[in-house]
Length: 84
Image 1 (cartoon, helix red, strand yellow):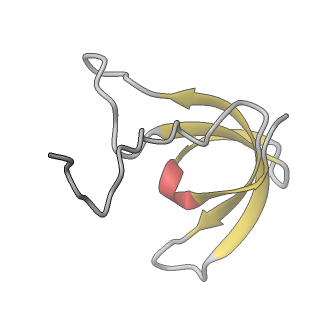
Image 2: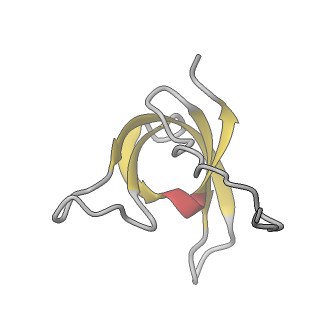
């Protein structure tokens, strides 16, 4: 008998973050209005503790406005142009 499901056997998609991606950095602070900058992903930190997959990995991003590399959570980033 064939199993009927709304969700076919789908493999989870790989993480969309890779070194060289151009990203939009969404910055939200309590005492300042929300704003955004543009940056380039330098490295993706995954599996830091006991080789576990983290729900919200830290991503090192070179901020084009400030010329600094910052650690930013993935939920604060949006891909503008993926690295080819």
